[in-house]
Length: 439
Image: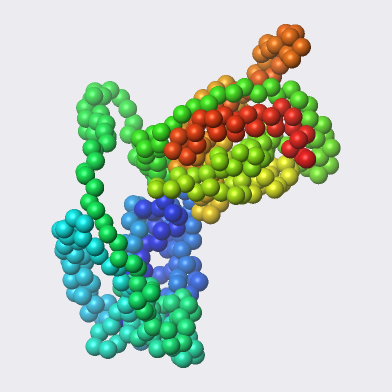
C-alpha cells in the first residue's frame, strides 16, 4: 500500500514550515536515512530524512511552498512492486478517512461532561487479513521470528516501520498494560477570550492614503510574535533590579586575556555574566526551575540560554552544564553557537531547554531594560551597558566606578521575590569578585 510522507515536526515548537528544496524526484529509489528534502522551520533550515525504503511515487508539495502544516502529506512512497496505479486505487479510501475525521472529532466533542475515554494503542492497519508493513520491517521481523500481526505500527495509518520491529520482542503482543490509562476529563468553563487587537484591515484603513510598505511575516517573526504575546498574557512577571560595579572584573578580564592571548582566547564581559549566572543557579537551586503547566520542574545542571539577535528575530542557544565549564570553554562555545545561530544552522536541541536566559543590550549603549520571559523559563536577566558613575565607597569616600545595571524578570509562579533577590545577589557577588568563579 502506498505510504504518505508527512511534513515532519523538526522542532518542539514547529507547527508549519517551508518546503525549501526537494533532494529527490519522482521515480527515485530511497532507503532509510537518505535525505529527502530541506525544510525551513521557524528557527532553522534542516534536512529531512527518509524513515523507510521505497520509490518516490509522487511529490505532492512543490519546493518553495510556505506555510505547510505539520503532518500534511508532502509525497507518496511506493513499496517494492507497487506503481502509480496503486496510488489512484488508494485515493478513495484516504478521502473517506479524511471525511470521517471531522465526524469523529464532533462525536468526541459531543461526549457528556465527566465522561471517560480510553485511548488504545494504534493497531496495524490491515485489509482482508493483510498487515501493512514496510519491506525492511518485514525482513527484520522474519529474521527475529516476529509475528507482524502482533506489532502496533507507528507509521502513517498504522503502518509498521523499522523502529516498531526493532523495539518488539518475540511473542510480545500489545496487552492491557500497553494501553493508555483511561482519563476522566471535565469540560472547564469557557474562558474569556483574550483581546487580539485591531484586525489587519482595520489598521490598513487607519493609514489609507499614506505611503507605506507591507512586510509579510516569515516563520520566525510569527513565532516571536506568538510566543511573546503568550508570555506577557500568561506569565505573571515581576522585576528585580541591581547595579554591579565592574572595575575589579574589567581588570581581572584584562589580565586573563593577556595570559590567554597565545591561545587565541579573548573573554568578553558576557562570558563572565554567563558563568556567574550558572554558579548562582547552583547556589540558589530554587531559581533553577521552569513552569510545566501544573507543576514546577527543578533542574540540577545549570543550562543557561543566551539571546542572540539575527535578522528578523532572535535565537536563544543553550549552554548546557555552564557551571562545570571554564570561562574559555564557555567563550568558545558561545562564539560557535552565536555564529551558527546567525546562519540559522542550529539544531533544535541547541536552542531548546535551559531554566533562564540572558539578554545583553549593553553593546548598543542601552543602560537598562526589562526583558520578556521566554516560556517555560523561570526568569531572564536583562543586562545593560557599563557606564562611569560617581559612587560612595565602603570607606565613605566619593569615587568614580564603572557601573552596570541588571534587571531580572521573574515568573512569580516559579520563583518568589525573596528567592529571586537572593539569586541576583549571588550574581552580583560573583561579578564583583570574579576570582571566586575560578575556585
